[in-house]
Image (cartoon, rainbow, N blue to C red; front, side):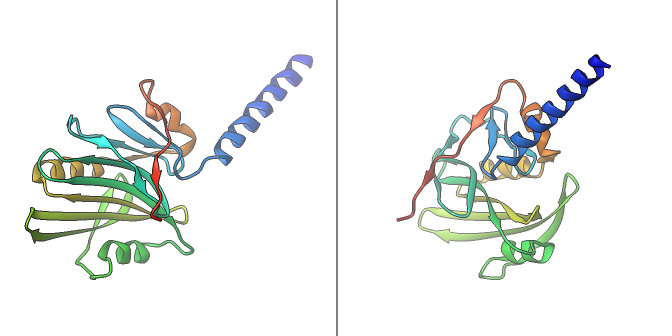
Length: 193
């Protein structure tokens, strides 16, 4: 009897700790290693391209800035992940967000069982051809966005492959999914003042 009371207390205590740990999570909570970025709030892992020219950078303060990389090796490339809390987050809102203010064509795709909307546009400038690709999905009351802006076609393709290889999981498993080589990640945010 005494043993079962101690066991029951232990189970309740660990459940309380787990609940407390998940309740303090914010959209920016995550882990990073040289192989992948793992978000602990939404529950996804993104493989990272193994390009030595990629560097992290201070993200613009925009809704919830989750992760960002940049490269200047073959023209500027910027890759960002951010989330915007919205009431009634839906597939329709995700499609509209992907289309943007210019109402670009969008394509519905499936990434690891989640519906995403994707837009792809190009602009010519004096610096070359700039490609902008946007992936949007509605998840847990947020619009989750993965965006690439790049002058480097090879790196753009690598980043697209990474986005389309995202794996979703129960956010409570984030530490385990991140792996032993990961460290906690707290994005550096730059103010737009």
